[in-house]
Length: 271
Image (cartoon, rainbow, N blue to C red):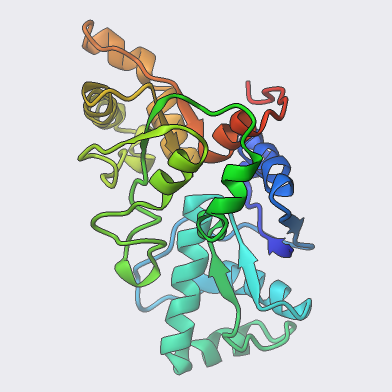
């Protein structure tokens, strides 16, 4: 199976490990992530402003790139990219007047028809649980907490799973030979871009999220969001300075766990 893949900016910079691990591990179950040509930044965050369609042009332009290839589906690993593309697509499908305005503005592009479906790689994996189990060479034998954050589950119209009680990542953990640990902060916000100018907010969120997972026996946390990864991983040293009793946990992308269980040797490229 081949599926068109939108990488987004961060997967080519700070989250290279996420992308490389996904491409290699998906090959093991017969899925080729075929990178799109001529993709551009998705716009980073879906704008809630209702009176400025300019914010949505970047997302729709990427969907036009998919349409140009005659494809009906595209997948993206990054939670932010997923949310931005999915919400923009949901908007133009419901509001014909906005689609017409966007198409009129991008007059050098072919008109977007609203027919592309954005799916998350975790949804692809959830349909192949039996195949994943067959490929496991080194069962994880770890207790792992799945951290969804905000953007895979909100708003509920674009959620990859039940937005109040998701289990899609837990299914993957169990298939890889791990034990899924449930914890109350798995669908809470990590603090997002507050890390830029309100670092204390991230310190508090990271402390609560990781402490909660560890209290319930987790050996590690997995995520699908590069920003969540940064806040939960890179901020742990600052958490320790404020809370000396704080006990850290390793943070992984879900694709990295797949390479571990599949016995794929990887070399970390993130500094």
